[in-house]
Image 1: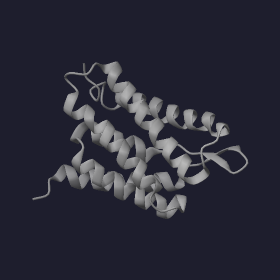
Image 2 (image 1 turned 45 degrees about the horizontal axis):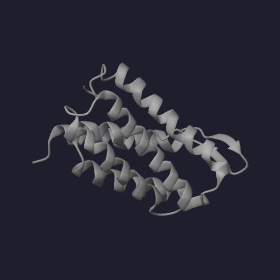
Image 3 (image 1 turned 90 degrees about the vertical axis):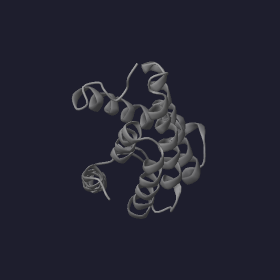
Amino acid sequence: MISISYIYNFLFFILIFIIQLYWPAILIKENLYFQLDIILIYITVLSIIYGRFIVIIVAFFGGLLQDATIFGVLGVFSLSKSIVAFCVGSIFNYRTIWSRNTQYIIVFASYLIHFIVSCYLTRGLDYIYIPYILISSLVPFIVLLVVNNLIYKGRLFSN
């Protein structure tokens, strides 16, 4: 039997995806745009709350949908978002053992891996993309911390 929370999360994921489609992109350089990855933030929240298994599947199909509609190269976001779901899903298993700072490091490192993989597979890895990767990782991390404090009252990450 499907839980009502899964139905709510599915409908909220569709809403997040539609918002992601129409979210404005900022031109950084020629052919280089920055767009806040709201789907990545939502996958992070789901991974911390529900663990790895279900969220890896959601991340894969969410990334595949995002590849098909936004990116054009199939499989890049599916791979990188699945990696993020796996890494951040570890927080669900070890949240009582790991300190809050360790959990922050894992999330930020997962975001870095996500953007390094997606940048490497689409543009190649060149030193000119390092600031783009750092900004693209730092902004969703800051938004996640704001969401954690405003919506979840600091309960996503525990000591």
